[in-house]
Length: 505
Image (cartoon, rainbow, N blue to C red; front, side, top):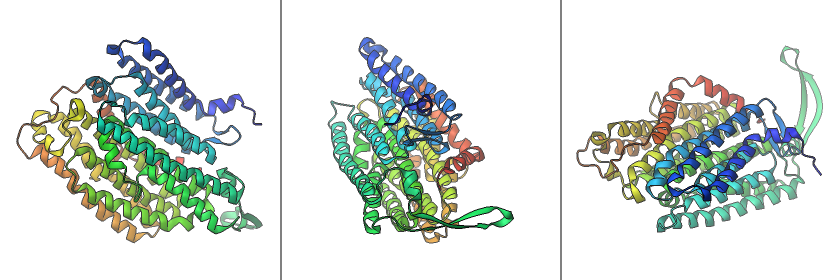
């Protein structure tokens, strides 16, 4: 039996703080009048800020917790910071939307916090059972959020589809864990990463450094291990919307409340990518080359289908849904580079890309939520005709977000793609890089189509003409300023991404 020490609590302090605030929000919700529910949003934001402070405290006590099931290292710190940023932007971008649609209830904010807790545990876990627990905490919360507009048929349909397909994918993941344990006798990633290594001697390296020489002998049946890895991949591929596990994405993003769709497109997706990196490049480090062709094929199919399908979309939310699929493909290019060549360069490129993508995609979704009006009646591309003449500031913000998603220079999206493609070239994945660049060129068309509608076509816009509330302005300011900062001054965050990648072998 593992004894819980004070240091264990310190190393999961951000998750503990978020959980405490989520419970507090649910306790206070019945006692707060309907016209003052925004107070719960501010309480949730206070919880995110407190969790950031807790993360700073935890960073001074790195190590493992709960018998090695959770790791407080630079990798988890980076992702927890990202998840807290996503949670804050989601809460800020949702306040006006929830009030306008008369669904401003405290459980919304509590569920966002709990989904963030699950994502944090997914990134920090170094034991597959713990990963599964984090996955379930996050998944159950997001299933409910997807159907939060209870009187809307599309929202109910989105929630049901997400729940059914998500449960199916979770079963694959759990079955994969069972196979891993059956083949290796462990579910600890540290143990998995060292199984089969045999020290055979030592040698004097360059500069007189002492080096340990070892050889690798596969443990267990290689065929069964391949089955286990495939099952784990399928379970996580659903969360990141890779082909052919992306079929739920357009319908769920279109039917879910727009701020929730934005949250789904970045939070759970980034958490699943964190698990893919931790498990496949860390736990299965000695086998990562065996899975390289899966990464490459998945990247090509995901990029291509996402971009080609987006060309024909007339609904802005569905367009961004297929765009999200394509961006998952770009991230897989970085993972392919890490699997084939240098883990550090590929992983740091992926981490930087996820930060940039989260800012621009979440910003676009919360802005679309504002423009759609009550009941999201106006979310087609044609509804944006002449928007630049009616709301020039809003049109300018949306243009910046779209151009960054397209990967134009001076934006975070451009440098994110540059780092990922550079890592692929350094790993000698020239063909994959060419396909990725061609896909980026294709994507420019559908992003610019929306910009052209806003600026170069006259007419009365059908979108909401209500003033932009200042919480939403704050969220947009963080997104837009962050995009330009990451695009013009990338060194600080790319250095942090490189440091975060260091715990992986």
